[in-house]
Length: 380
Ligand SMILES: *Cc1c(COP(=O)(O)O)cnc(C)c1O
Image 1 (cartoon, rainbow, N blue to C red):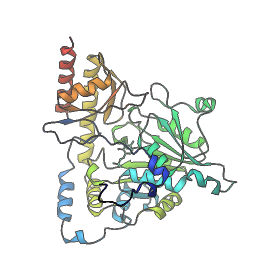
Image 2 (tube, helix red, strand yellow):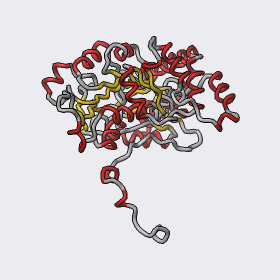
Image 3 (cartoon, rainbow, N blue to C red):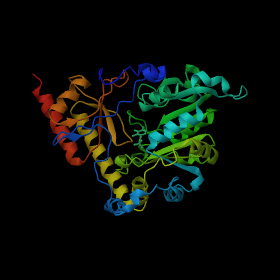
């Protein structure tokens, strides 16, 4: 390297970027026969109709730019959610929508004075609960926003408004508040009633990140269509077996959506992704059957692991958070890996005693409980 470049590019990089800790995605290892339960992917393939639609779209159209605003997809989603296409923006995954929200609603710290002094929201603050989606602090850091991380209750339920007021940590004026609901990695679902109360108390924008909502009893979509400062984030990745295609979206007030649209990359959603997502919406029955299978396996696996001594938290998602017996969670991660089963472990203090296990097929769940039993038996 030294011989190739005449000088170091280090001082060309913004100090903020230099110090940044990038988001760490779950591993995607290439190991034969590996049972992969670490990134909350859906174990079932996309519907045959979706695969057909994508294959049929691979022709000389690849030469052309896709529809810049994903018009057809937005029209279909508007029908599904009983709103207008103006209420919807599509992202290259909901991760991109979240990043756009940070850029549209939060002032970078050094520029926070620019915001009109009359505005009551704390312009530079991005707020979220811990534990929740570990991308949020990374998005804040990239943008130079002020992070405010407020703990959930010890069982990962939402603190009530009175407790948030008493605790004095929570900022009801934060420019942007991100709430993972149902929660990740906790798995707990929150009621629309308690989310509504929280939204009403916030003066800045609230994003309800419903990445796992199809596995839950309740959803908060109506809050995005009732409150002008609330956005609901959805994704085709988890429930609709489409991680590879990167399609997610926000639903909310047309003015917020229009603001986001101004900073969106012109062709942010690739053409095959649009085709796949549209075909998905034409075959929802197929996916609803998969949700049922995953929920049945979730119930079965929770019961089995509990009987082996795991403390399994209640889940409204396609994963469970479980505190394993006998060995530390980190040791379990390795012991399961030795048996070709990959789960996820987070080092954050609130969750370091737990393993996060994606709900795979029933067959994979059986393999996991077998491995767990063998690990417990092997204990000297
Ligand atoms: C997976 C996930 C996302 C991102 O999904 P993409 O649409 O694939 O970008 C967003 N939020 C949460 C909480 C997630 O777990």
